[in-house]
Length: 139
Image 1 (tube, one colour):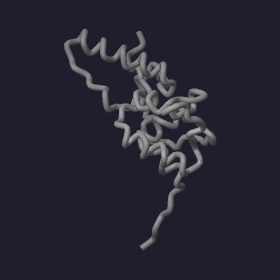
Image 2 (cartoon, helix red, strand yellow):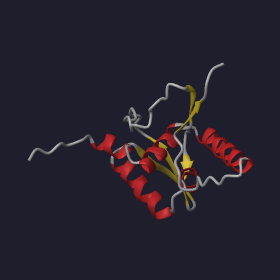
Image 3 (cartoon, one colour):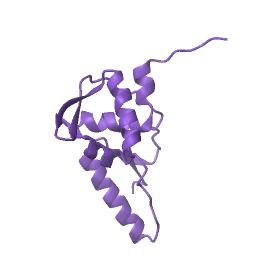
Image 4 (cartoon, one colour):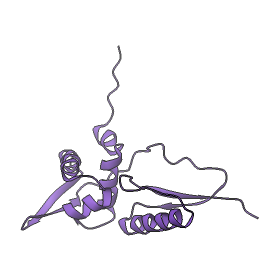
Protein backbone atom coordinates (compact mmCIF):
# COMPACT_ATOMS: atom_id res chain seq x y z
CA UNK A 1 0.00 0.00 0.00
CA UNK A 2 1.36 3.42 -0.97
CA UNK A 3 0.94 6.28 1.43
CA UNK A 4 0.74 9.84 0.24
CA UNK A 5 2.03 12.46 2.64
CA UNK A 6 0.58 15.91 2.09
CA UNK A 7 2.19 19.13 3.18
CA UNK A 8 0.95 19.73 6.75
CA UNK A 9 0.51 23.47 6.17
CA UNK A 10 -1.64 22.97 3.06
CA UNK A 11 -3.60 20.20 4.74
CA UNK A 12 -4.22 22.38 7.77
CA UNK A 13 -5.37 25.33 5.67
CA UNK A 14 -7.87 23.12 3.83
CA UNK A 15 -9.92 22.94 7.04
CA UNK A 16 -12.64 25.63 6.76
CA UNK A 17 -12.25 27.01 10.29
CA UNK A 18 -8.44 27.19 10.18
CA UNK A 19 -8.59 28.69 6.70
CA UNK A 20 -11.08 31.34 7.87
CA UNK A 21 -8.90 32.18 10.89
CA UNK A 22 -5.77 32.46 8.77
CA UNK A 23 -7.49 34.54 6.08
CA UNK A 24 -8.96 36.87 8.72
CA UNK A 25 -5.55 37.36 10.31
CA UNK A 26 -3.95 37.97 6.90
CA UNK A 27 -6.31 40.91 6.44
CA UNK A 28 -5.44 42.63 9.73
CA UNK A 29 -2.46 43.48 11.88
CA UNK A 30 -3.93 41.55 14.80
CA UNK A 31 -7.16 40.26 16.31
CA UNK A 32 -8.16 39.28 19.82
CA UNK A 33 -9.45 35.81 20.56
CA UNK A 34 -12.95 37.25 21.05
CA UNK A 35 -12.83 39.02 17.68
CA UNK A 36 -11.68 35.83 15.94
CA UNK A 37 -14.43 33.87 17.65
CA UNK A 38 -17.02 36.30 16.24
CA UNK A 39 -15.50 36.14 12.75
CA UNK A 40 -15.47 32.34 12.45
CA UNK A 41 -18.49 31.63 14.68
CA UNK A 42 -17.11 28.69 16.68
CA UNK A 43 -17.07 28.04 20.40
CA UNK A 44 -14.01 28.97 22.44
CA UNK A 45 -12.75 25.37 22.76
CA UNK A 46 -12.76 24.81 18.97
CA UNK A 47 -11.26 28.23 18.36
CA UNK A 48 -8.26 27.49 20.58
CA UNK A 49 -7.88 24.03 19.05
CA UNK A 50 -7.56 25.54 15.56
CA UNK A 51 -5.38 28.46 16.68
CA UNK A 52 -2.99 26.05 18.43
CA UNK A 53 -2.76 23.98 15.22
CA UNK A 54 -1.93 27.08 13.16
CA UNK A 55 0.53 28.16 15.85
CA UNK A 56 2.26 24.73 15.88
CA UNK A 57 2.83 25.09 12.12
CA UNK A 58 4.42 28.51 12.59
CA UNK A 59 1.67 30.39 10.74
CA UNK A 60 0.22 32.49 13.58
CA UNK A 61 1.17 33.43 17.10
CA UNK A 62 -0.29 34.84 20.27
CA UNK A 63 2.05 37.82 20.26
CA UNK A 64 0.80 39.68 23.31
CA UNK A 65 -1.50 39.35 26.27
CA UNK A 66 -3.26 42.30 27.81
CA UNK A 67 -5.05 41.26 30.98
CA UNK A 68 -7.10 38.26 29.91
CA UNK A 69 -7.10 39.37 26.26
CA UNK A 70 -4.89 37.46 23.84
CA UNK A 71 -3.83 39.10 20.60
CA UNK A 72 -3.07 36.98 17.51
CA UNK A 73 -1.20 37.79 14.31
CA UNK A 74 0.22 36.06 11.22
CA UNK A 75 3.94 35.32 11.37
CA UNK A 76 4.29 33.39 8.10
CA UNK A 77 2.43 34.29 4.93
CA UNK A 78 1.92 31.25 2.72
CA UNK A 79 -0.21 30.80 -0.40
CA UNK A 80 -3.64 29.37 0.33
CA UNK A 81 -4.20 25.92 -1.16
CA UNK A 82 -7.03 25.55 -3.66
CA UNK A 83 -9.96 24.16 -1.71
CA UNK A 84 -12.06 23.45 -4.80
CA UNK A 85 -14.53 26.24 -4.04
CA UNK A 86 -13.34 28.43 -6.90
CA UNK A 87 -15.67 26.90 -9.45
CA UNK A 88 -16.88 29.63 -11.72
CA UNK A 89 -20.10 29.45 -13.64
CA UNK A 90 -20.26 30.52 -17.28
CA UNK A 91 -23.06 32.88 -16.16
CA UNK A 92 -20.82 34.52 -13.58
CA UNK A 93 -20.91 38.30 -13.61
CA UNK A 94 -18.26 38.59 -10.93
CA UNK A 95 -16.92 37.34 -7.63
CA UNK A 96 -16.43 39.23 -4.37
CA UNK A 97 -13.63 38.02 -2.09
CA UNK A 98 -14.93 37.83 1.48
CA UNK A 99 -11.58 37.24 3.20
CA UNK A 100 -11.64 40.74 4.69
CA UNK A 101 -13.68 40.51 7.93
CA UNK A 102 -15.43 43.85 7.28
CA UNK A 103 -16.50 42.74 3.81
CA UNK A 104 -17.65 39.39 5.23
CA UNK A 105 -19.72 41.11 7.92
CA UNK A 106 -21.33 43.38 5.33
CA UNK A 107 -22.08 40.35 3.12
CA UNK A 108 -23.69 38.51 6.05
CA UNK A 109 -25.92 41.52 6.77
CA UNK A 110 -26.87 41.91 3.12
CA UNK A 111 -27.64 38.19 2.68
CA UNK A 112 -29.80 38.11 5.81
CA UNK A 113 -31.74 41.18 4.63
CA UNK A 114 -32.25 39.69 1.16
CA UNK A 115 -33.45 36.41 2.65
CA UNK A 116 -35.86 38.26 4.93
CA UNK A 117 -37.23 40.38 2.05
CA UNK A 118 -37.79 37.27 -0.06
CA UNK A 119 -39.53 35.48 2.81
CA UNK A 120 -36.73 32.95 3.21
CA UNK A 121 -34.64 32.05 6.19
CA UNK A 122 -30.86 31.97 5.82
CA UNK A 123 -28.82 30.67 8.75
CA UNK A 124 -25.21 31.83 8.42
CA UNK A 125 -24.27 31.41 12.08
CA UNK A 126 -22.01 28.38 11.58
CA UNK A 127 -20.91 29.24 8.05
CA UNK A 128 -17.57 30.58 6.91
CA UNK A 129 -18.08 32.85 3.92
CA UNK A 130 -15.16 32.86 1.50
CA UNK A 131 -16.49 34.48 -1.64
CA UNK A 132 -19.73 35.59 -3.20
CA UNK A 133 -20.38 34.81 -6.84
CA UNK A 134 -22.94 36.88 -8.73
CA UNK A 135 -24.56 35.04 -11.61
CA UNK A 136 -27.00 36.28 -14.20
CA UNK A 137 -27.43 37.07 -17.85
CA UNK A 138 -26.03 40.00 -19.69
CA UNK A 139 -28.61 41.83 -21.79
